[in-house]
Image (cartoon, rainbow over all chains, first blue to last red; front, top):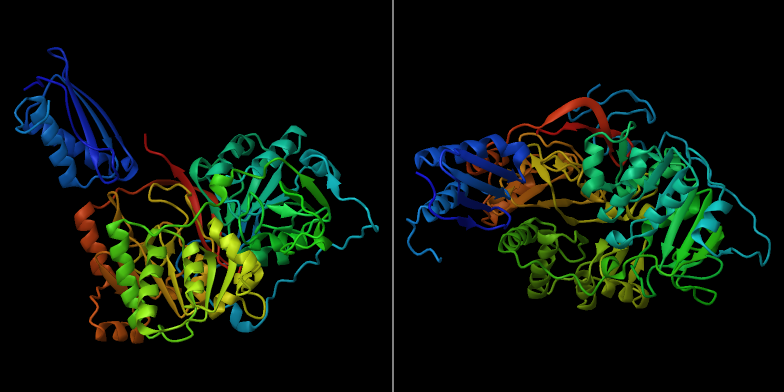
Length: 96
Length: 519
């Protein structure tokens, strides 16, 4: 699937992460920009979680920006899923 | 060679000299004296009515015979508002002076501008109790060839006595001073309270410059620093950013996590067996630490219990407790807000003390020896209760030894308060990255997830258990937290040593290796 609209979820607070998604032209694949305050210790783990969720939703032609301030794994997953669903226009209750 | 905590300590480091490994918190003190000889303080002579006042800081520095390889010292009572350290080093740099040893009682974020001077060889060696921010990052990454020496507040005094730190020039900013150099931090527009850390510099430096933005009529009262040690006096427009030196009062944290930790810590203190009439108490100024004072204050009022003295870094909260009559005396080596300066100036029971009296282990008894209960923070703590307050989880130097190990070694009850994880980083480790305070001097750890008593202290454990507190084995808590956060990947280090951590008695408790940053 590819994103329909630009979307975001999360915050810049400590222990949280913010995800920003925007659609890319066809056949662009995935473009990821990940920064994290705990990159030194959890960089590999963070990248894996993101890959995993993107694969679950079979996302492509997506530009994903993540700014992490030490979110726990469940937080990362929930924020990313929400951002994806919003970008697919599937999430109910999202303010537009 | 290994020290008694199992850390590998080299026998000799170029530019530092021979190192003695840490062998236990009180091992060297049991002798009753210090083997290392002390060096004499300089003796000087001034003629009657000779003027000490210089027009500019530069003029005063020129009079002090600046030279390559000199040691320049500063105090950190201006906290993050200090501007004179950067100014002084810039002046020396512009004169072409190189190879300077910087001996500041601590370094803050405001000192980041000296980083280029570390890179170009102006400053080649650093003694400090703390290093943070960009400077701490650069040092961890190996900007200096000679390792920095991290000392405690008490240990710094010892290092000056023994000549490990031989100060050629001491710069002493003061918020009020007179033409002879009598000086204080307790009055004036840039007031910062106690000037306790600078007293030893004034006594031992070959040249001493008092810098003030508030020249008062002779004599300047109180004589926190006295004229018989001062060579030159400089009047400048400003000694620092008053808004960052000391403002208003320190507020108690509103963070629910810190308050929960603090409440548990206060319960621990109440049932420890040391919460008795006449007890002596010290708390840090940080979030959960200071909040403990709030709950202790309530408990003291409820029980009608009165303590003896409060010690250390003093906040307005301590002053309130003094004014409430809960404690008889405050010993103040460092003040944290503007209200404290007023109290220090006006209350006879609020006493300014020098670092030597506060915490130097080698004299006939520093005041930290008289503490009953101290509450301290931690960047990391391990399952052996060793505490790291100097290097962050990402490997940078980002904290301060300060009075942590001094007070922990003196107190009957050392309570370490910290969250069990910060962001995604677990705070309880199998092994801390850098040991500053040895576990044998830490009695209990309090986190939001439970209380862990050091198994060395059975009676304390029994007292707390009987009071019905929820005690956990620190090894269980360590595993519990790892399950929540995941286990952090290891950092990469080289063999190069970029910092050595001195215990208060001068032995080496740990070293800091150069960090290799992952791309």
